[in-house]
Amino acid sequence: MKNYKTFLLLSAIILAGILLRIYFYVGHIFSDDAYYSYLSYTLLKGDFAKDYLGYPIFPLRITYLSITALAYKIFGINECATIVFPFLLSIANMILTYKMVKLFTGNEIASILSLFLITFFPTDIIFATIDFVDLPNSFFINLGIYFLYKSYRSGQYSQAMVGGFCFFISMQIKENIYYVLIPLLLLFIYLFIKKNKINFQILIGLGFILLNTILEGFIYLYLNNDFFYRLTILKQNYIYSFYDFFPYTAEKFTDSKNYWKNLFYQIFIINLKSILLRRFYLFTPFIASIKSIFNIKKKEYSLLTYWFLSIMFLLIAFTTSFAEFKPLDLQRSWYIYPMLMPTIILTALLIYNLKKLILYPLLILYMSGGIIMCNHYKGYFDVSNKNKLKSFLSNHREAIIYTDHFTKYSVDLIRNYSDPDDSRRIYGDNFNLNKVKSGNWILYNRKHIEELELQKYKFPDFSILKSGLFKEVTSFGAFVIYEKTSGNDY
Image (cartoon, rainbow, N blue to C red; front, side, top):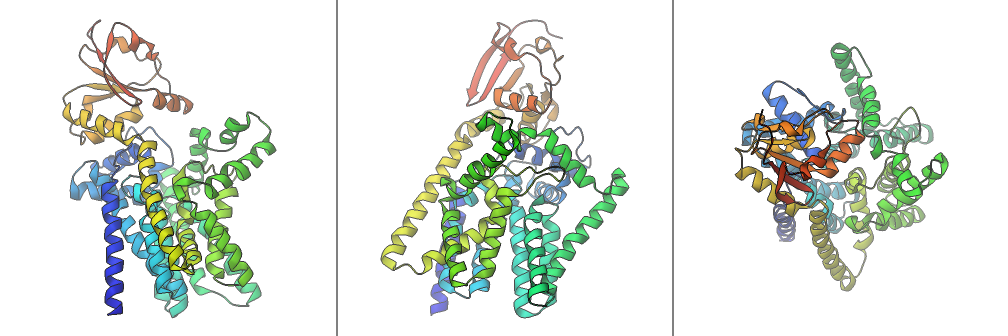
């Protein structure tokens, strides 16, 4: 009877999580998902990355692109297909969280609490329906850790092989495996020196990471004559989007070129605050930090504490460049994913011992906060205006639209790539907007243009849109649609 009640409770929580993710469906947000959707489409059509203009690193995330292309194949080329994979993995992540806590602690109540926390965690709810790589990447890394530890507990090396393979998969989704590689390597060295013991589970996991690096290297050596092509592209990606990385990120706040001042500000002001004092995380990393201190004093949950603290430290202060020290900027809230699992587990373990009189109101407060933050996320991404824009584009498929190359990827997706020629790139400062035919539209987003200009792309003078040659048709937040009304038709 107890097992039956537990099953019903777990099912109810997971069902609530599924319904929440459906209710707060976001979909395409005209951001990095535009690049992923386009690259997946070209992969499906057999002309991978043809005419691709965007972040250099994205085409290397081939596992994610392949699965999205598969979703296109199964469900059709449309917006919903792009989020099938993240949505399913978000559900799987809820189950994995429960299983992970059960494996590490053997505590049923703490496992259920962890499931509850991840179910209502706003970042996971929202990113279950956005075509970003962060959630899928972290899922496979966490699944790998789960199987490595399960292998350690059971002594079955086949489970470690599964864990290593999960690491292998994750490496072609995003580069976050290095946040796990370093703690695993240090743990392996510690066990070897202090305990005089070789941990074969860690060795197998590290072996798969090395295997991926070697196989990938030889493939890139054959294709591009560069064994370290990924590192080359990472460097190019840093140059391409320098404004997203240190020191530029800190300079915007300090208004200074002093390296050490900016470094201090990046690590101890921007990054530390972004993790510990962020409403989107419902302050769970701060709570997990407190639990970590208790764990160290009591000498309990040492592996979980090490997992959490090592990842948090690396996120805050690890370099994103091998050429010079450049820590990651953590202002984007979805960068929490590498440390989300240990954060949730430690938070659950801290509140586990609270009296019911305190625990239940606290869980209600957490659940309410999660729902509130989901609404804030939708405001952050301006979902309302973007949904109206998507509907407008779908209802006017026949219109010829000129726009920047980045926004064009989104327009083509919303129109299901029915006729990509109906949307045309505005590219180059010599592009003559006056030559756009009467009746055709210009889809303009000032923020997009400003960012693309930072990426060294050139555009014509858009002030002509305010002249008598164009009229504003409608606007949706930052997106404005203009119609060419007069002038020469070519």
